[in-house]
Length: 215
Ligand code: MN
Image (cartoon, rainbow, N blue to C red; front, side, top):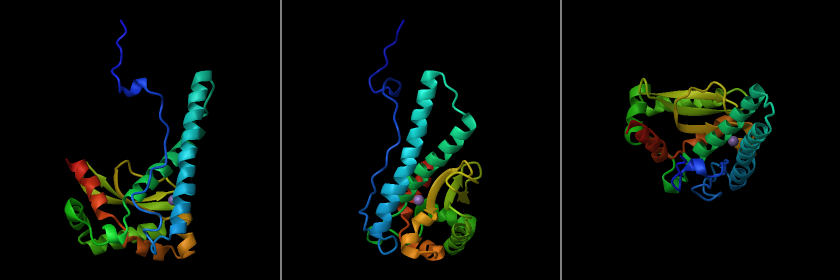
């Protein structure tokens, strides 16, 4: 007997691909911390390239499966991890930024503020450790604040590229420290960009991620 799937069942729909998310603010809204020109380049060129890269691999997988061809799993999955990592991290990054006039900057709020104080002793100590993680990431990478549900501890993670050295925890906050994220505005002075980041952190968004986890 054939059971007809209910409408809206995702198994019945065409396979989805990744897409570039819209930003919650105008391209010029984070200036002078991130200039309009840099944000346009970062979002529409760099982030878009990871979306395209991930989708190209998904399409390659679909094609190989249809034709019964060999995928070369090791190389394919390595590349897929890189592009999906880039897409997911950038999406989180845009969402955890806000213009200073719309809530960006200041201090952590809610449960996140409590968790940071409990783990690090103070917001200042957390900032120092997070900035050190961001400033010392080798080559291209990210600093991230994650949350471990087993220990209920917020933990800083230093990501190489988009996918190396990661813990499979929940990400609350990320900062992109690839050169493409700051070079146009700050040249080689990554530390100045990291300092500017504190003025545009959307603590409300980071706290919402934690509260959703703890529900
Ligand atoms: Mn980037």
